[in-house]
Length: 320
Length: 255
Image 1 (tube, rainbow over the protein chains, first blue to last red):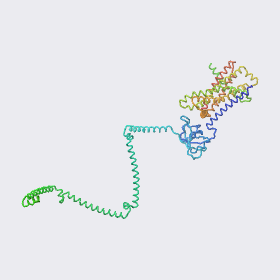
Image 2 (cartoon, one colour; image 1 turned 180 degrees about the horizontal axis):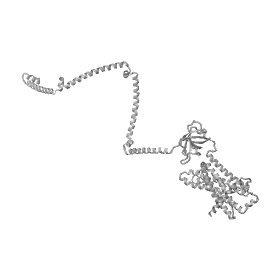
Image 3 (cartoon, rainbow over the protein chains, first blue to last red; image 1 turned 180 degrees about the vertical axis):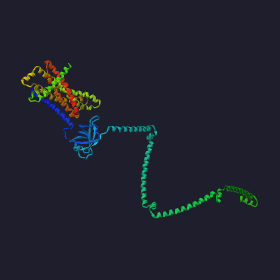
């Protein structure tokens, strides 16, 4: 019985320590679930919540700011998710923040992620309905991925063919490695540059010329601008037309003549087309030639005969 | 023979039931034996604490070391604190602590009351005007009801520290991160059912020890048998209560 006060003190310590542990543990668990901090309740509508349930964490930019308090369907396509947000965080979360459902790690619990909207909106208030972004459907994503893979496969196959062709043909490599070609290309570029410089100058000149012409300077200017000149020109053109009409008539006559010639009408036509006549003419010419030969012979004989013989002798020897 | 064993069993259950009714009848009536109650609290609480503390530390350490390879197989070693904390707080620590208490407290109550019964001290008490049931049974049962939950809370704390040591054997995890992960994974639904069932464990251990001691017969031999059977019965009942608690928690979906 003497030890009673000491025992009671020890017992008190035991009870105190144990109770403190229990209370502290419960407090920490509660603080993790935001039970003791003041919160506001907001909500978002999703078409599919993928297994989210009450008690799951709510994160804003990765920080825990609250918990999901209730999940219930409101129509055949909408599930309302109500969740609490710690009052300490609401000043940073605007009314246009976007709510999405994610996963904590690869295998972890579902969580709600709040992403900040554009700046300028007011902070959230009790009972606000935030905009929801529906979770990525894994199946959908995989289906797209399969299609992308197929396309990639085809593309890489084509690329393979192209690169094989590159490897097998030397011409491209030669073109790529040929320094002369490169030098030529360089020179060509330099020339193109020069040419373009010149064309710029020429264009400038042309511009000036056009301006002069517009203002009526020089022949072309007069041509375009001077009305009297253009009237004269007009007259000239009319005269030229009359002339060409005459030419056309003359040409028609010529055509008639040449046709007559071809058909053998008239003297010249006969001359050109009648082969018998040509033969006769030939014959006559030969007769004339023969006649001229005979005449030459007669004349030679005449030189050596009296009374002309003396004259020719005198001509050969004038001293006699 | 068979029918007599069944008969004995059923009659013992009936007697235990009447004993419990008597406890509830007398336990809340005035003239409370506070001095004896505190002495029993000290006996049950403080004197069992070292045993419970060492067991808790070892359990935390062992469960962590044993869970590590299977979590490593999933590449989920970072989940070790969360997994271990939930299994320790929900199930392992309450049951192991209750079993230790059943062994230590149940046997001591059974042996003490049994020897008092066979040496007729209980009868003498009655003669001297003290209510032996109030003085011996009510104080011990209430002490067990109140102390075993506190023992379990302390054991939880120590087991979690053991888990922290166990986690740090293979990885480097700061105490801050560890406690964050532990309290992140725990919920009231994990802690409260285990505390509530601890009261029932305490009640079962106290009442069975007292009942076995009070119904001791056959002299000194009977004292040994009373101590033995109080331990065996209370361990068995602890498991039955644990099963019922798990079922009820599941039905109420306190997860």
